[in-house]
Image 1: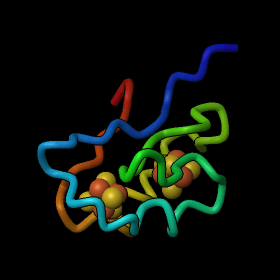
Image 2: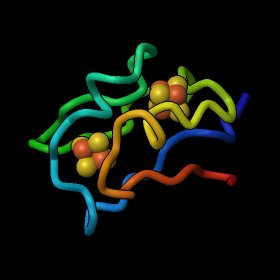
Image 3: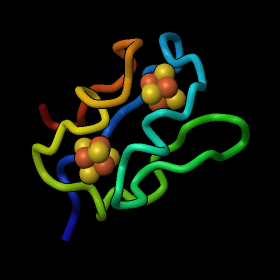
Length: 66
Ligand code: SF4
Ligand code: SF4
């Protein structure tokens, strides 16, 4: 089943702090090529917003389908 909710990172705003990678308990985000990347869309919990509200101080996270 296609996943319809997962983070989208705006790399113009992202500072590479990796707080979101540390924050998400579901392994959706990981450090890859020196950047925070979405590596497991399917593991993201629909309408969670945890990484946006709980970790990113730079307004760099929005969600697909919001
Ligand atoms: S929205 Fe929630 S489950 Fe999805 S990546 Fe962010 S913290 Fe993880
Ligand atoms: S918390 Fe925000 S600024 Fe930091 S790596 Fe994640 S998206 Fe980028």
